[in-house]
Image (cartoon, rainbow, N blue to C red; front, side):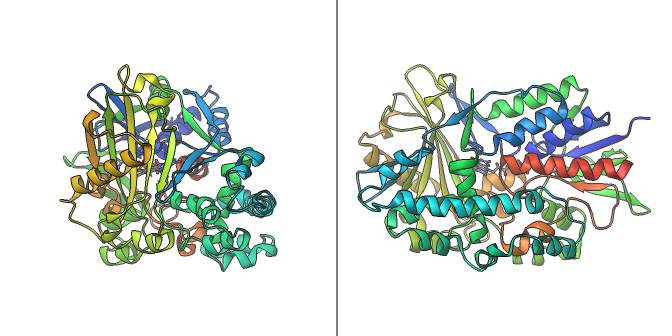
Length: 491
Ligand SMILES: Cc1cc2nc3c(=O)[nH]c(=O)nc-3n(C[C@H](O)[C@H](O)[C@H](O)COP(=O)(O)OP(=O)(O)OC[C@H]3O[C@@H](n4cnc5c(N)ncnc54)[C@H](O)[C@@H]3O)c2cc1C
């Protein structure tokens, strides 16, 4: 008889696990608390505009291709390489840096500030590449059965990288570059992990290799939500049913196994095995009531920052704005040290703007532009009151208008704002923390909440909150690791 697997959560981790398992012959069913699939990879459709709500690009495209091969399908969406990758503007200068993958074009951007940028960057990126190659298969794409097993694997990594373990991302970058501009732009990627270069390990400089050399960044034709629509179509064809508006609130168990997931209406959902795509730490704490993840202990863990995101439709074109743009201030270090905990950083916020309609005209009415703003902010542990949301949004819109040399405020015809309160409410993100558990050394690999439950042998986890970590490609790798756990269980 077919084995029945129930997956709670339709984030990218849940969806890709469901298809991998369905294609292996399992009978798969999914439960989702929201009325739509995708989790953080979602969309807002309003006033004729379409906005991506969370992810606006991805890296490691080969992980998506590997997923498609594993499932024996063509990828059900089309992605387009971004080159240039993005632009960066500092508030004290009219200059906009354009980040190209081509080293000569990239170095030309820093000709004045860092004349020997090319040589320095080559040295930096060679080291990042070595870090990537020496860890990706051993550490990132591996299941660990114990902390000891993880530490033993780490011990087999080339010891030449040991000094990097003891440094922050910033210290590593500072060692290679002298100008403030190069240091800040190269270390910006640490923010993609939901913390700052000043509290992220230098190990993650391997991301620079992924960003500039190994693969780059990709957009999805028609907007990022096409990933979800394509996967849901594949799942439907494979016979996977998704039950929406169904939130798991409890589990039933017997003899060391889960026997049912219980939803908000007290309905029991039975299967042979269960995969949780909700946050693996929060689920263990709030649903399974494990002491290790009690409210008190959850608070002590290292969480990523929150995001203030807003989705703005304007009734004019903005040809001077690129697809992906970062707007920074002049107090990088001070800002970074405060942004996670101190709301006063919001007086002079740093932010990112994505213009999805630039390459996807269907995402905005004729002659209009869809703008998606992301501003790093303290999560709800450090700022619970968001009554000032509109004041902050207005100040960013005014700053943006100044920087692009065109006032957009009178042209706004659509406006939606998500604070960490909405991110918490919609997707059960702990205290509105945008990327969930951080990649602190005590919370990665064998120290991250495991993808197999400690007590129930038929309960598994998938997604950004378990191994290997945050981001779309990591969710796809996570689904591969969890699929192996499930299939091993049934063998
Ligand atoms: C603002 C923002 C920008 C980002 N930008 C990028 C980017 O550009 N590139 C990139 O690679 N990554 C980006 N990320 C990170 C990326 O979105 C996540 O790492 C990834 O989408 C996580 O997928 P997941 O499957 O782990 O979980 P989620 O997307 O969180 O999905 C979990 C699902 O489980 C559901 N759920 C939760 N609890 C329950 C329950 N009890 N019962 C039933 N269902 C439940 C939720 O509703 C949700 O649908 C961004 C994130 C944010 C917030």
